[in-house]
Length: 242
Ligand code: ADP
Image 1 (cartoon, rainbow, N blue to C red):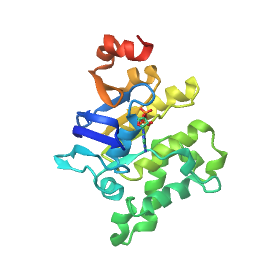
Image 2: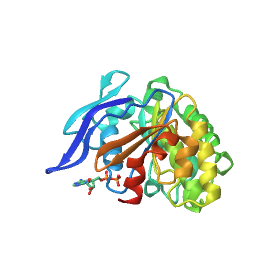
Image 3: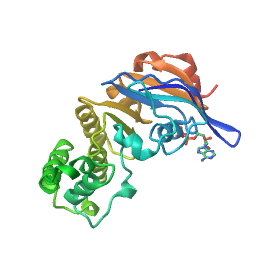
Image 4: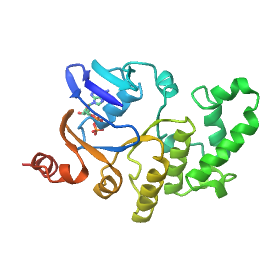
């Protein structure tokens, strides 16, 4: 996935300014930067929740900029759900089955195959196993601990069968143990997929990212490996102030 001069203006304010992001297939790429840097806006552009003012988003050579979110999901881009989208009274298995049956889920493709119900259950259990929640499939989401809810969000994103998985602060608000578990989980689910994530925890960025893009005021300040950007004077200044 590659962006070319991707730009988003909000009534004269440029939140994302001519960003050229180059994410190689099969790699894990971190987006970092101080608050207000444009990370969320960039994610919203990549998933079609916002339409760019100008620029391109190239996915396997096709420009998907400005396409509807459903179309972009079908093209293989999924973002982790937010906890607020979980239903406390629904079981984990029901969450996965619902995600698979949704018009943007895998179910859409199974629809014509007449195997859908059995296939949904089987695939739901596989996805729960992938994120380490298989033994809790019958439990209600409301009874999960925080870290488990975040793992369920990742499973729901995987239900969309993405080739490009976007994770918005996957370790936010977690204690050390959950952070390390999430690092392991993201490594595992990145197999055969491309992952772009935003995280403020530099331990997480350093453990996971093949490449890091640092954004500041909507622009790319630095790009490179974790060690390269960490030692970049402009990055140090951006984080620590002048
Ligand atoms: P980050 O996720 O890096 O903290 P954001 O992408 O949320 O940054 O925001 C980048 C800038 O764009 C901020 O200054 C924010 O106030 C502004 N911004 C974001 N969304 C809107 C919007 N819908 N309308 C106007 N300004 C916005």
